[in-house]
Image 1 (cartoon, rainbow, N blue to C red):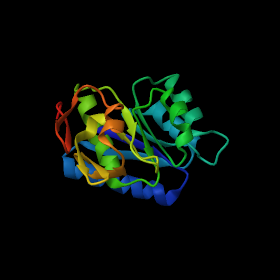
Image 2: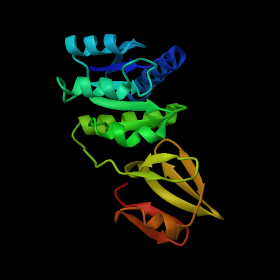
Image 3: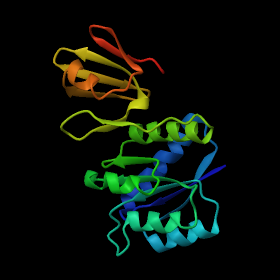
Image 4: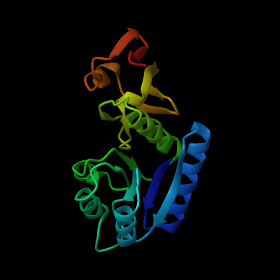
Length: 199
C-alpha cells in the first residue's frame, strides 16, 4: 500500500486535499492511503524519517520559519525516493520547487480534477511507465498543464479547447502559436484538430 503524507498550514485545505485523495484512490482503485497529515514541518520531517512514505504533498508557503522548499531540501538529504508534489498559489516558486526533484506542482485553488491527473501520472510512473514532464502555459490566467495529459486540442472559433483525461481547458489562441510550444508527437490531423499521437 502506498503511503501519502500532506503538509499544509491551512487546516481546511489540508482536510479537503486528504478527502480528495481518498476519493481518487477509491475511484481509480489505487492501493493507497493518507497515512499522516500536519501543519507543522518538523512533525512531517520526523514522520518521514521514521516511516516508509511514498508521496508527499507539500505547501510551499507554510507560515513557518521553514518553507516547503526548505523542508523538501532537508528530506532529500536522507530520502531521494519520496515523490514530492508541491501545492502553492505562488507560481513564481515553480522553478525553485523543481530543483528539489519534484514530481509535480499543483497551483491553488486545488481542484479534484487537477489532483486526479497528477495521481494517474504518478501511478504510471511508479509502475514504470515513465514520461518526461513537459509543461505548457495555455492562457493569461497562468494555467499550467502537462503536455503528456493532453489527448487532443480542438479549435472552436477564436478559442482552443485542450482535452485531457479528466477535464477540458480553454484559451484564446491560435494553432500556429500553440504548435511552436508542442513536441513532435502533436500532429495537426485536421484544420480544427491537433492530436497527441501518443494517446
